[in-house]
Image 1 (tube, rainbow, N blue to C red):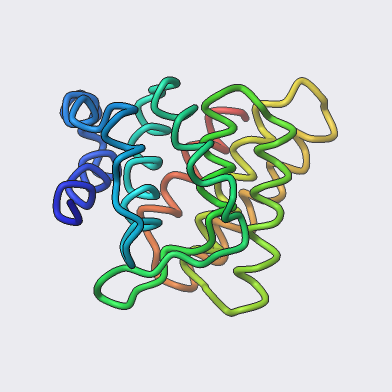
Image 2: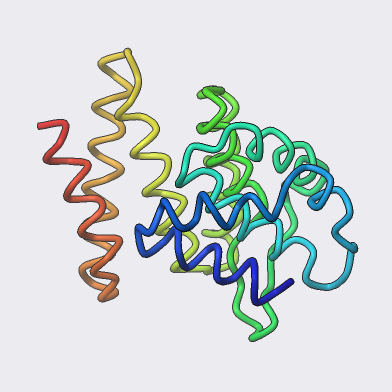
Length: 178
């Protein structure tokens, strides 16, 4: 399952959304509920969550939100001892997929707080990017301005860190809303 969910995540992150959507079919609600709660449980759910959010698969997002909701402050390690960040990040992107913007914002702000506290630089940059993108979608002018500021910060920090794909994503969001 680790390889399958990691492949699903990679498809989504590389923009192969049609393939990711097809691969998600193998992870219906019954399969997700049946996942064994092993060391890799949260990482597997996070991988599927990322693909669900990227493809806009609301049915998957709803199930995943429920499965991840009990663990908002837990960190998600992978087999290679890499940390994907905190569960709140994934709850935030799932809530956004479900159109629950207030919940999404609260989850992403919590993820930023925890990732900053523990020096998780890459997950922190991703959570800030997601928060900025979310705020840009707001109907409120002040929130859109905040979203632009957050994405400007993401652009600056990702440049310093050499995270060019995330920098490009932030620039694309900023130019789309210019």
